[in-house]
Image 1 (cartoon, rainbow, N blue to C red):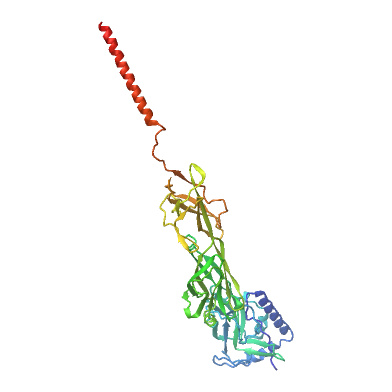
Image 2: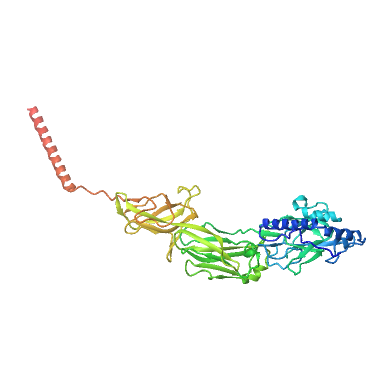
Length: 520
C-alpha cells in the first residue's frame, strides 16, 4: 500500500505578532487531520502494519521519507528551532528548511518536552485533536531539553525519540515578544503543496520557525545645559529603535540617524556614538564606521545633522542592538526650541522622537526714585542662578554670561532710556513656563546710590513684550550734596550782631545814670 502523508498539524510559528493568523492555520490543519482520519484511517493502517514489523535496532536517524512504522527501533530525529524577528513571511510552513530574509535572534531559550508516545495508530490519529495548552512543559521537567539560540538564531535538539513534543520559549530576549507554544511530532508528516502534484514526506530533521517581534523603543532627550545664558551648549541624546524592530525585521541596506534642528540651534559637536547590545553593554562605534554631516561645529543654525553608518557594520551587530548618539548644540535664539530626530533603515525616515529646550529674555527698567518717569543710563547689573533655597538671600554662584551676536558678556548696562536687556536665559524643558534668577546692581549711574541687595526676577519663554518689563522699575536714589547757605545770610548776620551790641551799650549807659542819681 502506498502511504498517504498529511500536511503538518503543527505550525512553524513565524512573523510579526499576529498570533490569530497562526492559530487559524493550526485549526485548519487540525481539521485536515480529522478529515483524513475519518475517511478510512489510511494513515492508521499504514502505521499499524509498519510498526508491527519494526526491528529492534540501536538508536539511529532514519532517512527522510521513512514512515515511523518502518523505522528501526530506537530511531531518533532532530528538531532545529530557528528564531528570527519581523513580520510574517510567505515561506512554506511544512517543517522543511527555509531561506528567511529576517534578522536572526540570539539568546532565546527554548525547552522541548516529550508529552506523548506515538507508537500506535490510535495515538497518531489523536494528535489532530490536541492543543499545546493541553500539556505542560518547563525547564527541568522529565524528558525536557533546554537550549539557547546561537548568533544565527538556531538551537538544535538532537536524539529525540518518536513521540509528541511541546516547544516553549522559556527565555525571551530583552525587548522581544515571545512566540506562542506549539506541538510537533517526531517524525513530522510534511506536505509540499507547491509541487504539482503535491508531494509528501516524513521528516526526521524538522525545521521550525517560531516568531518573535522586537518592540520599537526610541527616544530623544535633552538635559539642563548647566550654564544658563544664551550661547550655552545644550546636550541631547538620540536613542534609536532596536535592530530588527523596523524594516519588517530585514537587514538594512543603509542606515542613518538624523537630527532636525530648530532655527535657533546650531550644531556644535558629537560627544559620543555607541551601540548598546541586548544585554545593555555599550560599545563605542568605531570612527571609521560612520560619518557626520555637517562637520562640527556647523557654520549656521538650523538645518539637519546626519550620522551615516556603514550598513555592513550595522548588520553585523546582534538583533536587538540599538544606538545612542549624544551631541551638543549652541542656543542662538530664544523661544520654545523643539528638536526632532529620525532614523532611516534604508526604507525612509522613521520618527524617533523630539525634545524641547525653552529660553526667554529679561528686560529691566532703571529709573530715578524721586521721578520714576526718568530713565537712568549707565547702571550695571549681573545675573545669577538662585541659591540652594530658590532665593537671592544666600550664597550666589558665578555671574551668568550671555552671548548676543558675537559678543559675550556677564555685565548688562542700562541705555539712555534706562532699559537693561539680557538677550536670553534658560527657562527649562518642554512645558516650562517660568524660571527665577537673581539680579544684582553692581554699579549705579553717576550721581545715584546703587541698590545693595540682589533681587528676584522671574522670566518667561520668548521675548518680553514691547513696553513691558521682567521686573518692576529698579529705583535709584540721588546722592545728597553739601548744605548750601540761605540767600544773603552772611550780611544779615553782621547787622544783627551790630544791633545787639548797640542795645547792650545803651542798656549799660542807662544803668550808670540810674546809679549816679541814687547817690545824689
